[in-house]
Length: 396
Image 1 (tube, rainbow, N blue to C red):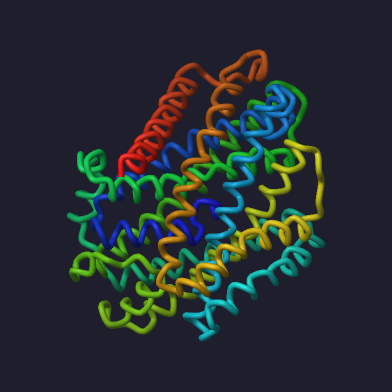
Image 2 (tube, helix red, strand yellow):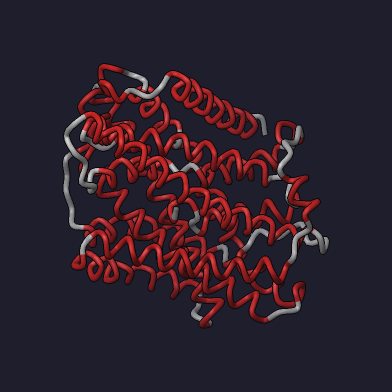
């Protein structure tokens, strides 16, 4: 669930909510439904093959193709890490007054958190993640009680809008929401995490494991959808309704929550949830990075080392934007990072859909034809929207 609510997700949801009200809620819901199908396939692949998605790609695809997929997944992880750096640094600035540039540097210290949790084992790490998710959820329950979005606005936002295909700005933010929701590295992560479960060798035991894994991931993504939907509705209720359609920075959102909602607690809860979100996303990105690197190129690094390498790569653009363009550009960088995730998404989705539809790869656990057909439609929609975005960019 935490992989679907990183700080970049916040930036796209807040920008979309302030600019277009609840109109993009439909996109958030559809993206979450797509994610449920794809994550279920990722779990099924791991259970059927005993390998994660990266390992299956390496063993089943030509080496040049596998190498390109690895580069795309690493780009997605770095884009995610970039969002985590900026989001956590902004949270530290808002809550404790830490200068943004210093906050960016301090985010590198989360390597010590990884080291500490590494010693306690995977289940303890999961418990820590769940605890932070509960903190985020409680913050946004309180935020929604303060903002009080109308039921009419929520129902209107659940209807698809034709403007999505005619308004280039709306499409850009919609793809940002899509990239932030159906995150490519999460597919590798989920397939890898499934290999930590004790699954029996018989077909019946594998079917049972697949069934429980699908229930597990679906419930987690429903939880993530409630959080992401709350962020978008909060922006729509607090900013769009007040005529503030230009909120693109998390700092602006924080500073305007108090005067617009009349509550100091609203702004403080926002900052607390943002820091919790950044820390949580750091953990999942580190795990995903390990799975991707080991699966594709058979290089195994300690989690702390992997964290440090990725963080050092991502810190460079974060520091450059912060020092040269100032904090006013961080929101645009966050949204851009999520669009990069969207562009990288087909490189994970297409092989996943192809593998899980193949009886040669999956054996008796091959995905049902209806599920494979639905997944193929999802992949086609993702590719088509990305092509449309690239075409709009080329056409100016």
